[in-house]
Length: 381
Image (cartoon, rainbow, N blue to C red; front, side, top):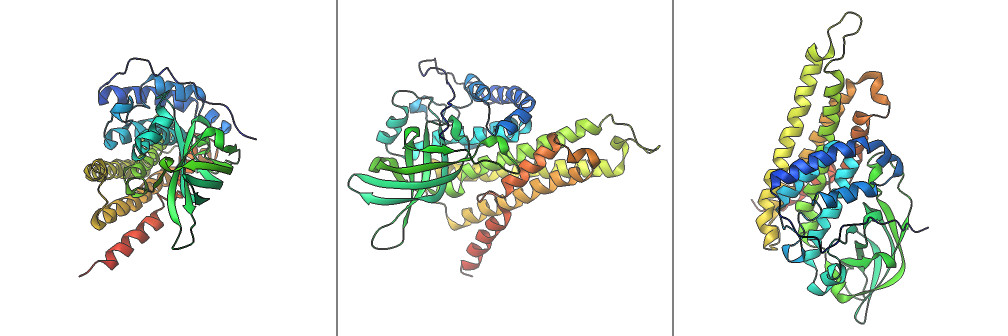
């Protein structure tokens, strides 16, 4: 059965504001505290609450990277990463869904103006979800494409009125073409199939299309920027924030905890101190890597320049390293959590969320390392 609940957003006629990045970060931190209180509810509902998305609108966070000409702030990917990171420190699923909903307001700019107007012509607060993997099947017809199939892993789809969905266009000659189709909510059904190890609150359900026509102006080739650029580091910012939030919760738990059987309190134990120090260092420097590589990508993406091989190598290498550092950081402190760690709490949720994020095709360390090695070995001496 299709899900019909949609988040109510403030009117587009509201006066646009342009707060500083520092102010937006403070708003994200306040919202993160609320999201942390709702984290268990979010996971059990298998979707971010409407109230949380409404609060993102109220805090003006969802306009962050939306193009200025369409009512947004047009900020840098690094600024976007920072907001994602702060929200994910409170709730990994909330940070992940914010990453998707806010980020797609920039991704829509890759389409012709006619397609953008289809989405925002009447309401610039309309949100989009996505599923970029080319799982849909399409056939070229006069004026557009006939599209059908299932698009899994559409995070935040309960809040979207449109979706960016990947598919293969099959023709008589040559290999199929990977396209991203822009499709309205009325043309797909949300299948309630999101039952997972982690990131349960992202509601990354399957979108089913029985068969629909997509006009030419709503179909584009998959841009480099979406496949291997800043959007991937947005997701990795959510992964990092989730890891940091789990470690923070562990620190709060043991800071004033008494020792056992006459032993020293955990906070005075060399073992605990070393583990926390290592884990915080990994997350801190993984974050520095994400922001540094994102800064390198920004001018390429702004000018829509294809990524050179050396930048792809840096991007994919960074993804592999950061994913490994995130997992290592959370797993290290989880091993010290003892029996309490096996219960449903902030740390165990962070471990499940980070593990699930690390299995995402764009963040998988083995896959990213394979691409890096392949490109390096293909370069001339």
